[in-house]
Image (cartoon, rainbow, N blue to C red; front, side, top):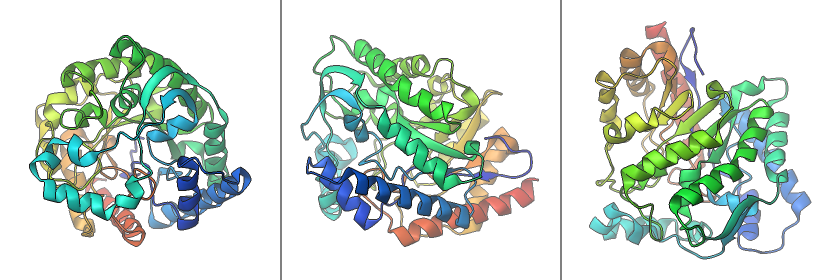
Length: 383
């Protein structure tokens, strides 16, 4: 993820699913019978297309768009035991900012009502264990085929962290949250290892580290800062032995277009986050709630073994960033942590759950092109 020649570009993961694929994913998530062979073909072709699109607009480190998954975290129900079906996703009543602005919640949820019907969370009511390793192997095969002769370390696949699983899926089985985190870390380790062994980079998605301060599913995670420390400890256990230079940790405050007036400051959580045994840290840096937080690196020294992957594109705003604005955002971070330790990215994914999209697909690709163009401008000034 380090470059001595120019600013590299990437994104956080999810990209819009094609309509035909989206319908089948929804059917499967709803428990309807689907033609698995046909679904595999749809995913394979969609990943091939989306990787080519990323290359065409100038993205250096590409992903599969999470196209095979119903959501960045709830896809685990297909792969792991222990989760019983129960709709727990009530965003308008679970977030402090939506409680302050219920009319905003009503508007946002109304716009995405059909998609959120399929974006359910579940309770943990049994032992968590890997029940099927084939889906991650299919993800690996699809991305490998789409890359062709391009090196695999120029691509990444996503998986949630133990802390994110606990955050999304209330514990109704384990005696303590610590036991829940430990069991989840053991279960997820296999998926992490498969991705690394295949030669790809692994992005570990952990919105819970910031988001759980203002947003609650079920009975929540307990004390927020205590959760941050325990979640990082569980993550480090899960990734023990994996090469840090191939790992990137994504933190965000919830990928939704709400007021976010209760978001915990990055300064409060950055120090424990920096103890994660990963090289690259992905943070929000483009939206109006968190853009100012590049300033914390005036006081917080980024360890020598860390790289920053700041968001320089807002994924919830339909305004198209000017490449010069993108370049300015990159330059701020580069000035504080060094040009070789900045990888330009997006604040979050563009389609966190299948069908949930604050940005239309045509604008997604325009924004990613602006990201690449802004990185080119910044590279000319920095290198």
